[in-house]
Length: 318
Image (tube, rainbow, N blue to C red; front, side):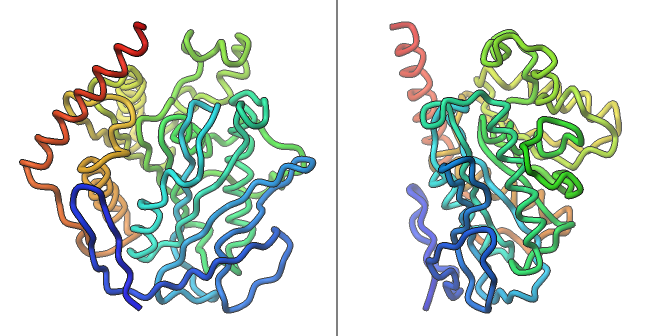
């Protein structure tokens, strides 16, 4: 069976690989076998079950030691769904990674503050490492990724000592080997963000990756539209990382705002940038397997992105 990956602007790409992920659901204690399960419960808080969705490479075996990537959706710590990064996860599974998308508590559904979202993300990373043996994952080749609030959660995994959930096995590290971050929040001590924590400065520092940056922080690719009000946080992170000797690459697209990567052709363009970044670190091999958008497609996408940005500004004024 062939596997077809479709993108809105660039059409469908025939990857020529067999689909292996068999829909199934299991809790975190269930045993594994040769048939991959693609939905697990990685954590329960009372009756609230948090699921992690897994996609596998075509030739995956439980005995493998594959690199893995886990995505966290955006939504301002208030809303969102694991469906956001389906296409990116599917692509990287086709490139040989075990690709995960983790649910977490958000304000609209669970009445939580952002620090609880961070706790869940750290729990998800620990779950992947703890279950690496049956998931065919190398626990020392783990990549975290996410967009906006989800990018913040991903980056918080790199903090050695942060907020922790009761019951987590703290002997398992949350620190990833690489980070692919789409317009993330990186410093929660800023005035517009700390209000979400009722002004708790100490708590804000605990979930601020830039505050905890050091020379051994994981390599990071940080992607922003130049018009994104969060971009200065990316600039600050990169400058501090460079001064410390940590690797931080910043991808910027002029004229585009927050969330630009969700639509074609920028979804494909950012995927290619992420692919090359991960290839430079040895997680994947060869050239990207999707077509690079043409200059004409990028120009059209930039115009549409600017129009979306203008509509967003008008809605905020109204």
